[in-house]
Image (cartoon, rainbow, N blue to C red):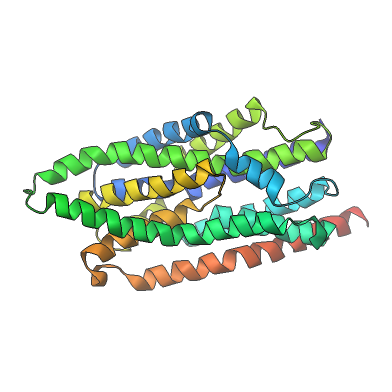
Amino acid sequence: MPPLLILLIALAILFDFLNGVHDSSNIVATMISSRAIQPRNALIMTALAEFSGPFIFGVAVANTIGQEIVSSEHLNMIVIISALSAAIVWNILTWVLGIPSSSSHALIGGIIGAVVIGAGWQEIHLAGVLKVVLTLFISPLVGFIAGMIMANVVYALSWKATPKINGLFKRMQVVTSFGLALSHGTNDAQKTMGVITLGLLISGVQKEFVVPFWVILVCALAIALGTSVGGWQLIRTLGSKFYKIRPIHGFTAQISSAAVILAASLIGGPVSTTQVVSTSIMGVGAAERMSKVRWGVAVDIVTAWFLTIPLTGLLAAGIYWLINFVMNT
């Protein structure tokens, strides 16, 4: 196996691990904040679900990332390595700062930036990029609407219930959290699978774009391990800064998020779990009372979201230029 391919695979696994730390913690934020389950148990359960997701629901998102965004014929390994490096740097930076940014946006921005400077605009599939960007930016809005609708339905069905119903919602949150983790593993782990398989294709190890079983296994393990490590700072941000979450809120936000993410995964659309979970939480809070949502925090996060793709694109272009400069001197 060529050394550059080994480096690419190592970076992809690191990105997948950081994705588990950075993104997957969002899945357990509402469950922990509403005290439905202990944090450590929540992370272990989520890790198991994350690992299982890609094996159950297929690799449609991996095919989108590896085939529909860029042409592989004129790409080289440095392009993909630069894209991954930019996404990793961005993930680490936002994790340290406690900003719930998006690993998905970071990876897409990195790929576009590296490909444009390394191979030119002609290697970008505009139809594929449009599909990805629309999915990334529409899904948070759908999450907000789904959260509001689901919350209103749940409130209507339980408005005469006694406070004891909170115990039921706590128990149901375990199920909805598992479903949300399955949907996240199905969507997010596949992005790394698509990148590794693209590297195998570019290096000549494979002749066609087919995700090998060992790639599915390694990526599922990496994101599950990242989840078990947990992103405690992000958990606090998502779980308590939007508004005070009760079990009914956690249950409603999780079932809404899981439905949106799984639907996108089945049609091959990459989404940001961070965004969908965040906006679902906001939608649930807004359904109860608009003033309950802490919109200031939401504005800060949305600002970071819109900066991610252009900044990681520029970062990837800079890394590509630097690598080529070092190699040619």
